[in-house]
Image (cartoon, rainbow, N blue to C red; front, side, top):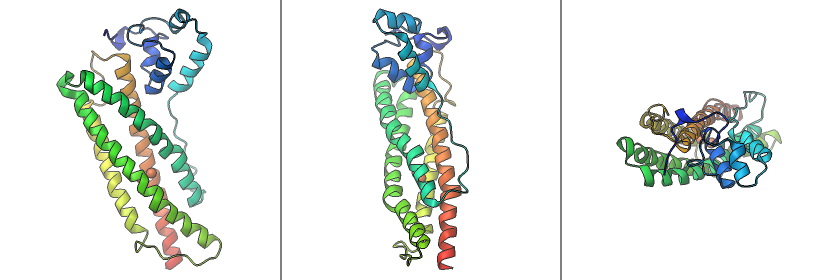
Length: 247
Ligand SMILES: [Fe+2]
Ligand SMILES: [Fe+2]
């Protein structure tokens, strides 16, 4: 299989689009375009070979390649329930979609090219698998234990009903466990950044490789923001809420 190094890729070509991020790679694959062998073709040429109208393909690629923007602040006015809804819909849903897709791609890349470059892909794959397993378990705990409890606190207090005593002593106990797990996520992200030398691809890297690096960097940024919102805003406000209720 020939891999076109990114330095040789023309703007607007299949290789250029494929290297944007992993979601763009999936769009290209969906249309049966070969981002390795057809990397140097313009998107229009690759579409016309297949009798495809390039306009909708281009529109889909532009949407997929757009960087994931972080919604800025504004959480101070939100209720705890609204804050949790934001975390679930913006961060948890993203992880549930993105982690399995990235994992499938890294499985394939590590099995084909794992030994290259000091076993970089093998090491990256191992760190990613650990991250994915930790996050799956962590999201489950938040969604089944901590978040419903915080919502129950807020809704009972808001309706003037008696507030149930926390089954775990104080809300700070599960919060402490979640924050220890957040620290572990930070460690694994740092390990992945070190393995990939700051996500700078080697000169041998093809578009797919670059795309996966871009998507891992996006994942890192998203996880850092997710953890910041939980640690600095949700947890602190839930503890303050509890202090107001029980003195
Ligand atoms: Fe979370
Ligand atoms: Fe969390």
